[in-house]
Image 1 (tube, helix red, strand yellow):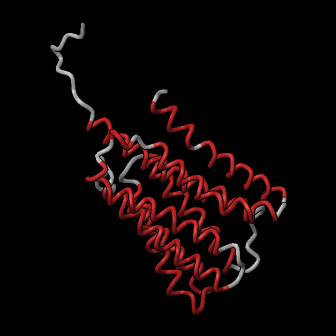
Image 2 (cartoon, rainbow, N blue to C red; image 1 turned 90 degrees about the horizontal axis):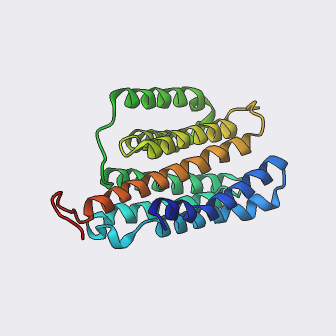
Image 3 (cartoon, rainbow, N blue to C red; image 1 turned 90 degrees about the vertical axis):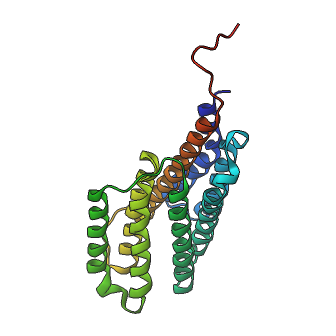
Length: 238
């Protein structure tokens, strides 16, 4: 089986659970999303572990990045399950878990093969977004302004650093910023006027996690290629 096809197949359970979750949300069937939300990161972690060709990957050199990615997915699971409880405790627990998840992803992005310096215009866009976020949500968050501002700053860092890995990871970082912006506005802005807001948030979130992990898999695949033995041009295979 070709490596690209193998990687794609490992993501099918995550895609199936995600599709079930999103359809149920769109149709307003609440019991199903409460069950499927806990399985999103479980199937994504399985996809990550299964899609990497560990026998061809220099695990010792990339172990910090791999462990950080696993930690990011794990703390995202904690965040997902915490936000199922619609109260301040659940929100703050979820916020803290996702804060750690973002820091883990940022660390992994720095350690993945092929990372480069961020482009100046991307840094500028995320800094402007952060200032707009504070301007819009600041007056509404009251005592939660500090945690929300800290989370927004780390989220902007995720968006910036994800763009240094590859296109998929960069899209994932941008979708995370989009999803969490809608989530924050929906929680703090009175009468936030967005149709199917929970569905929109989860579309962005699921897309973000998928792109980040798939981008990381592609970056690790680059290390597989770099580690592969080279055949001299003048070698004749008989």
